Image 1: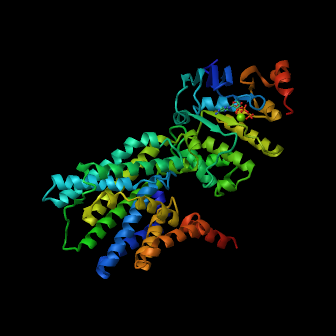
Image 2: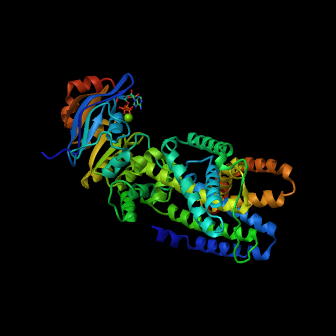
Image 3: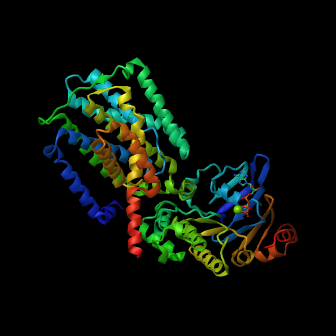
Length: 241
Length: 322
Ligand SMILES: Nc1ncnc2c1ncn2[C@@H]1O[C@H](COP(=O)(O)OP(=O)(O)OP(=O)(O)O)[C@@H](O)[C@H]1O
Ligand SMILES: [Mg+2]
């Protein structure tokens, strides 16, 4: 097997007393869609914060494309090809959809040249072409999610970290977002997804990592994880979803 | 990018050229009093533009930019008086560079610690720094802040002094306007806007936030320092209290707010309105000057929180929605 795009080795993150991430290891193969699942507060978003360099790791190492990245500034990681969609959408509120996405295209991974084309393409992929001139502050939740995705896609990532892109969406909107993620993967982008919608996760993931109270308690393809007694007990048992 | 921006805004640019050209005739058609009013409008606009490079574009409001006026003024002043006797124009030219360099250098020294402060903390830190620098200037004898400094007199083409400084300020304002336009419509301008809107997200998208902020802070300080040099010469005699004026720092913000923060016409509109109002309309009523300024600010916050440009935009939207 080739080098995984992302590899975590015994990663631990402490916030004073709290161990938010506890000795977590996993690998995300190139070209896959992998998912991190687990109950609220399990530590999923924290892992994203560590991978993007937004927070420093306490212990362990993270490799991106075979290169150690702990301690690398967020900006540099973005330019190396790690993009992220936030759990709580963070648009640039005063800017239009187009200008939001354009900033993704102008920066992001090194080497985009036709900014206009990259911007239009990312908006089209996320189904935002008609809203190009709408100010981000006037978008509904569904479109905000698309905007997060479009901006991240415009950054031409190698690895896309999507934190609950379906949160707050209805069934059809969820379906659309899943389709967008599939399209993104079809372009060769590796996706790491955090999502509470189990149906969506089961359908779209190649591989699932289950986190509970900061620890990885299971890992495998969707069917295996769904039937894992630890997972049923620790996660599905305690959470109504 | 820049070329496309120029093309898209061709009419605005043409209007700007016409207005600047018209301004050049002012000293021929009016009294020295109005030329001095014109000077003040230009100085305030240019200072407002320099301020907005960081404050308007990136959302980092400095409450202490008068420090850079003072630094520039005294750096150039001392240099010209001590080393450039008998060569006023050469001294002035080198003084401009020195004033800009010293202000830029001071900004680069404090940039690293204070640009990590966000929002109001940055504003307050800059206010503090400007107070400290003013005190140092006033209390350390070699800076001659309390005693004062008489600058070499400049003259050219037989122009009256107020006309000469009007033209120097006009040239400076035009150059700063062009620079600000170029920055606003380049990659760094887009990055600054992203920083203003949401700095964490900007970083997550690969915007080199630290580098951009520091660059703009230094540019803003250097330009303000250069303007301080011209201002010092227009005064002829400077003391700490005539150049390290907190009032300047506040005016830069107020004029930008009034005109429309983050825009390029904002500082011009704000400066023109406030200077004409306070100097011309209320010129003889100094006692109610502050009262009117205060009342206007309250009105501004209530009626046009996004300044005149914001108000115009809102009205236009309402109009086209009918
Ligand atoms: N910056 C921080 N400082 C202190 N504690 C934090 C910080 N970030 C997260 N935590 C704590 O770490 C734990 C894991 O939080 P995290 O946000 O990673 O959970 P999550 O799995 O993403 O949950 P959710 O499904 O609700 O989004 C929580 O107890 C949270 O309170
Ligand atoms: Mg989370």
